[in-house]
Image 1 (cartoon, rainbow, N blue to C red):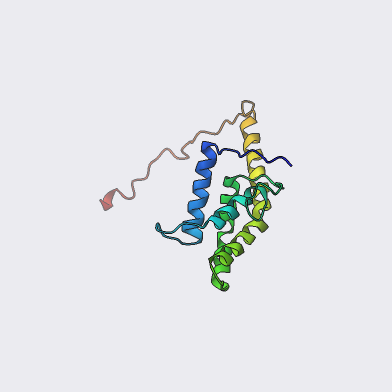
Image 2 (image 1 turned 90 degrees about the vertical axis):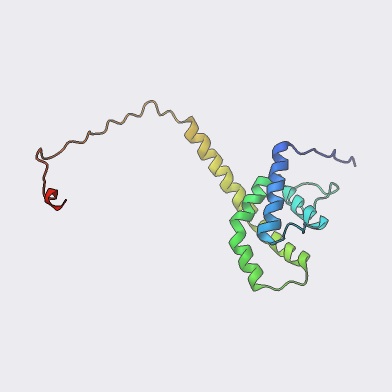
Length: 155
């Protein structure tokens, strides 16, 4: 079996990865600037790209999500994640992280489909021919010619 060649990230992918990493670190796990995600957590996050439990080049990919899609899924699920973290106790950080990622895995396809629909709607509106649409609105016309001076004596 031939090993897959390691793919280098584009500038956009690096920016999206950094945004995802920082969001998970700061908003989900509430880590401060002195803490970082463990290697296993990073590999679990990267595994979401291809629908794997953990990123491993020996396992065949079964999906192709982007870091942006994963970040959007985290944002979409943040209320459910926070509620789950309040209502459950965890044996350690990895148990907690796996719980969070299970929520993400259960919602990633929904978010992906919504993002695809939004992109199609955006493309459709950009391609619309609005030159044939004309709108001639009525101009404002005053009903009376007399302007009332009822309030002049107040000042």
